[in-house]
Length: 156
Image (cartoon, rainbow, N blue to C red; front, side):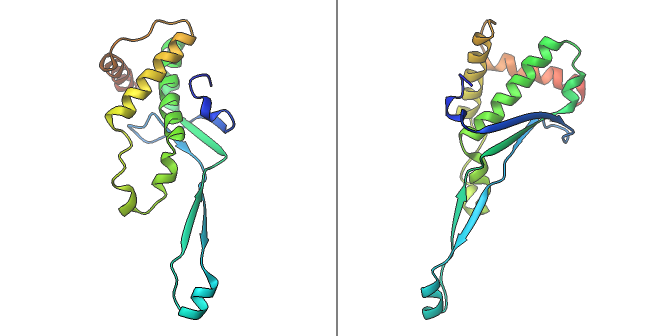
């Protein structure tokens, strides 16, 4: 949690689960939506716009593709799972789940996997490697190619 200090008070559970092809991991959290209306305006004018308030989840669940268990070398599997978890934790930190619960017209402008997002995942991943006593990876493209090759071998 040293890499994600803003997530200290949030309960996050990680587990392996059967996921669709081309999905290394995903995050789930129940976004509470409350619909409020102005009762007086409704009864007097006959119509009113409802306000929808969204509350951040207090608990999240990160699901990792169970096919990653097929990686024989534990060190390599640990690195790929860490990369996937960091990716999903960044989604939690950026509050992407809340924006995805909005109607399509509002959220189509927000792109989730932009270049800055991927660079931030790479930066945080290198921070975790440093904390674990491993040297940082110099180029993001090399990391993406290595993960892609391993994932391709597993058929994910």
